[in-house]
Length: 69
Image 1 (cartoon, one colour):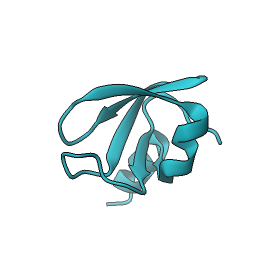
Image 2 (image 1 turned 180 degrees about the vertical axis):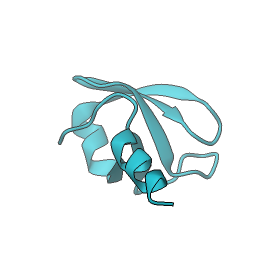
Image 3 (image 1 turned 90 degrees about the vertical axis):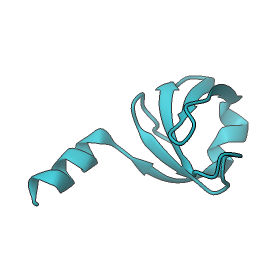
């Protein structure tokens, strides 16, 4: 799965604060993520993490969506 730094991820399960969106701060064998809702940062191994991803939102996609408005 191709996940890059600054991608927003929509997860299958909620973070304890109630949001499902995470921001990727570091990608590799481990991921460093920041919860969009509460700002908590945490690391999680790639093998465990890839199962929880529902959708990947790239910054290019966001910029392309805003230009049509």
